Length: 338
Image (tube, rainbow, N blue to C red; front, side):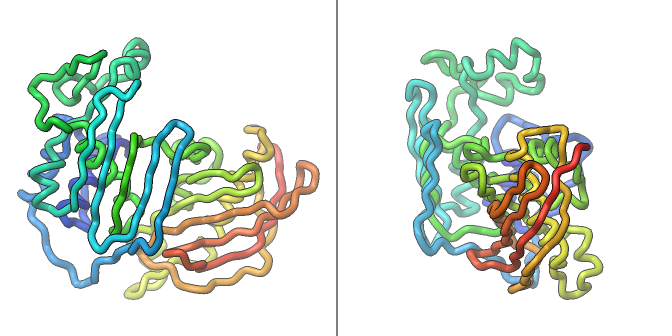
């Protein structure tokens, strides 16, 4: 399923933690390009309180991420969830700023109605190849030069910055827990950080598929020796039904598998050959330090420690939840032709 940020944004901001959504397509309806239709559907369906306490990630120290393209993301400690965004287009056209403490009422009124926007020079090559079939002025704003093309006037003077906040809330929902902190974004976008891989790119490298694909995305590489992946451990993982009923815990062997898959991606990058694949050979000094529960976000680190020619390699790997190592070990691999 693709393009889920609008529906996830609405669910998260309106206070919904768990929901069942049935679809017969590979992406949710685009509607008018905003999240307002989803807010209305959520309000119509209604919500119910659950017994389990809501889980939060509390930002304890500043986190800073900057891309070579000029995007900046800073996460600061705060006792609420606040998002501030400075949006600027090509040549800094239509520079806008918006900041708000996110609550259901504010989101419905000030953020959800903000619509998707695109810059003509960025989508023109795709239009020429007939790759944008669902987009139109009915569901998006087009900026061409200094002109704004839309079926209706802008809903806010700073509608672009507000829509970027809408997207940020939806993207952050993918980590599987709520944040208490202040997100400051400058010229944000959807793509992963330099060197990162989304789920489709991961599947181009790994032969694994659901339910055995244990990596949602690769967050980035550090040179040729380090790699970090991520997996959102959701309550509907098939292994939770039997491990253990009434007290679901992610099996340790699957944590090892997640580490092996991230390390395999690192090794395939090192091998620089799509015709070869890394096979897991052994695991040494494996330790399971803390249980992993539904709702946790698993950050998977792999560091290459040894490489022998182009046949054997060894990596130290760890799984981390809330800044604490939950499992780790030394894994060995070999390269074989597919």
